[in-house]
Amino acid sequence: MIAAVARSYVQEARRRVGPKRERIRQIVERLAVEHADAAIALRFRTPLELLVAVMLSAQTTDANVNRVTAALFEKYRRPEDYLAVPQEELERDIFATGFYRQKARSLRGTMRMLLEEYDGEVPRTLPELVRLPGVARKTANVVAAELGHPQGIVVDTHVRRLSQRLGLTRQEDPVKIERDLMRLVPRADWARFPHLLIWHGRRVCDARRPRCEECVLADLCPSSRVRPPAGLAAAERTLS
Ligand code: SF4
Image (cartoon, rainbow, N blue to C red; front, side, top):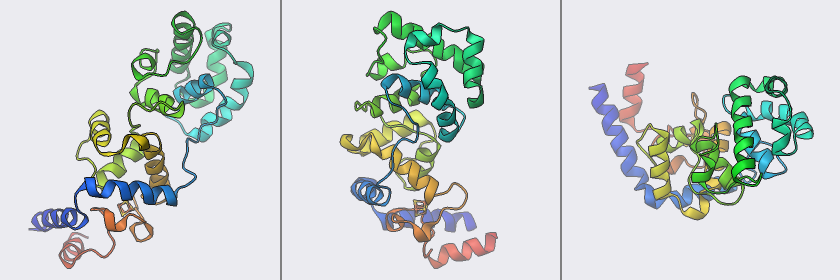
């Protein structure tokens, strides 16, 4: 009975907010106003530094990467520099980012390929970027977008959670979520859209306690808990 009420509430919520194609532009526009400062938090000055910072950011925070790269980028300026030291030295220099052995291996493999196949430059296309050792689709998407050539949409934990809550996808797999978002989000917004969701996720739509009462998307979101209908309120009371 409670499940049926919850199901009908979800259906009613989807009906209330309308089709996602009619909501997406407003979602982007409102978030762009709300989080005008939304941008990548990693610090870098060159495409090479961007690539290294994104590779180091796996399984750690951007703030932690920035602490490490402040010194790292003074010592390692060109791809050759990463190959001129023993692997153990590079491991020590990136130790604080975690998974330092794997990351050092990936960095050195990537630098070797950059030198051998790309004249030491960071390539701009996804197929080229994902060939680099240790560079998966998410890393490639971040690098391509930040270099001004977005070819997909970055899906991290915040993008996944918010896309689902906003009813933009029903998928769980990041590749399928990205595919849904690429069909929905205007191409001109592919680079900034993930930043907007990431910052909204950090500031408002928390994983455990979304602050729907403060959310600028409350009337566009089928998961909003602002003024739930009596049916849901009764179901929630029974469940708690
Ligand atoms: S209304 Fe609530 S669930 Fe929906 S996006 Fe805003 S904070 Fe998240």
